[in-house]
Length: 388
Image 1 (tube, rainbow, N blue to C red):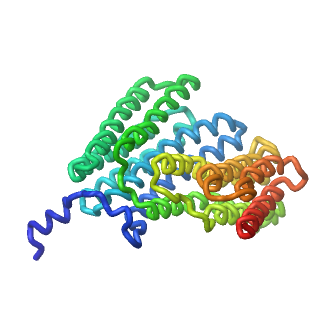
Image 2 (cartoon, one colour):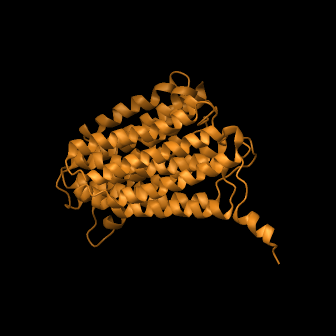
């Protein structure tokens, strides 16, 4: 029989910081489960963007996609960095993680309402559930890590204070676009500032290889949005009435997807230092990479709607729904990695091809031209790096 003391140690183990140089540190099954739940919410935001663009409300859809994506990404990112430093895998840690998952699912359920009517009820409730669970996490860290007690308490207090702001934001029930946007941006800025101030004196002992792996795994799942859209195009193209246009869309989507994967998982080091400013640049900058990766999938879905006559916009707008987020994906990779680790001229490949990809829809090749440029970007970048 398991003794009472042994059971208690399983339920509530101490939570000291983990060794930041621990060998063979890999993502846990719980973290992978957490990623899956987060991607359900990302998929809901991507679907909202897809339908908004297809219905001719691109500007409104993009803004609401950014807002909903920020909430999902920020909650995911905070948990990921905390777990990298303090995951002790006791019962309480698992239960708090599952509470955060429940909050993510609540947010996912409310995203369509937010796109339709700016109704933030479920998103705010889900987000606050996720963030208050993080407050408990940081209070546990403050208790078990005396060297970084002030850092952990700064996180706990900062997160709690910002949640009071979001409750006030919800109570106002804003339906006017401009005040809604302004107050949301203020709230997002407050969230982003919490780690900046908390980590100033004594940063948490996160594991560099573990963090790089966690970000890479989420990027793979996000890229699945494009894979799903491409498979839908193939399915529709092979229906009763063969559609060559859908086949072109599917093949272009797959080529773009494979190129995005290849560019992200290059041989160069993603995050080569524990320096705080570098870590913040890399961690925050990935918001552009993740959001644009999901938006490429939404753009492919829009292009399918156009080809099947279910959209209210033309082919050029549909091509740009793919080209613009793809260009942002390249610029995001340049911002967080290539400008630090690549020498000239390889350092300038991603920005150059981002510009060319934005121009591609204006050419006769259109979406196929975007796909060709994505492949050329991979080839040119690899060639220049290998030559150097």
